[in-house]
Structures are given as structure tokens and as C-alpha cells.
Image (cartoon, rainbow, N blue to C red; front, side):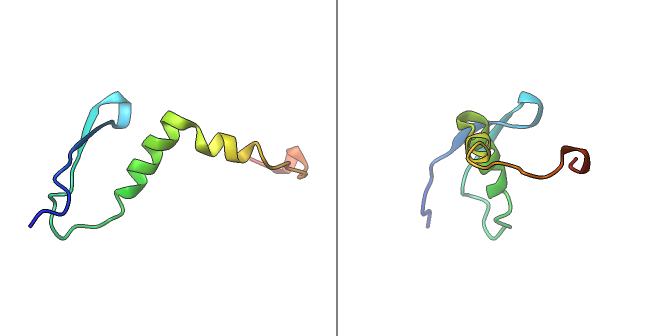
Length: 63
């Protein structure tokens, strides 16, 4: 039984193509972070979210 046979092509590390599908069986779901990274790369979500906050820390003490 296939819940979602859809396959996605996304950009992987170093610009290499990465194929994402749901046919892996009982595997870890940690790969969802790769999809989040791809979405952030395309939409700039993290940068836009960070722009909503003001950092009042002393710059000399922050990496």
C-alpha cells in the first residue's frame, strides 16, 4: 500500500540533485530537516524570522 507515491526533486548538498520519495519503508524521519533546509533556501524563512527580533547583547560576546 502506498500512501503517497509522489517523488520530489530538490537541490542537495553542493547543488547535487536529490530525489525525495516515500518508498523507504520503516526508516527514520530525521530527513525532514533536509526538506526544511530546502524550503528555507528557497523562501528565506529563517532570515525573515530573525529580522523580527532585536539582539540587545554586546556584540563582543556573541559569536
